[in-house]
Image (cartoon, rainbow, N blue to C red; front, side, top):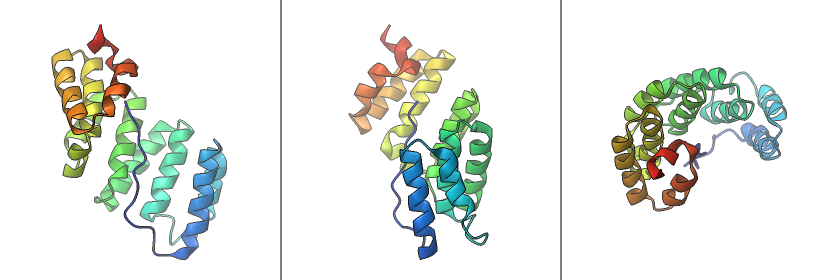
Length: 167
């Protein structure tokens, strides 16, 4: 399974958020997720539920392997900001880490249309289907992912979730 951080079309309009978001991202890059959360905890209460702060908080939780909290917060984020695609990807990753592949598949199948065009949906479905034992469907999904984005081919060969496809 691949977890990705998507680039965003726009930044929060409030300049007050630029510093804590940047600091939090820097801490995550350095492998210091607790400090990243600390920066986000300093954000004014009126901005704590903004899409940018929620995304960064979920990233920190994922780095800390706090899967249940990350899944719950990403579900809430998607409910409040349905056009913010990263909440879907973050939720699927957390569900995967919680060994809830069936639910992750359902979230992927309900994903917005943009996700189908990136190939990540097909790639992750291939991983789930392979783990669930449907190798024919997994092969179909990985072919679709590679057709959309050829860079998935290298990842697929080394992904432990997909090893059964190559044996």
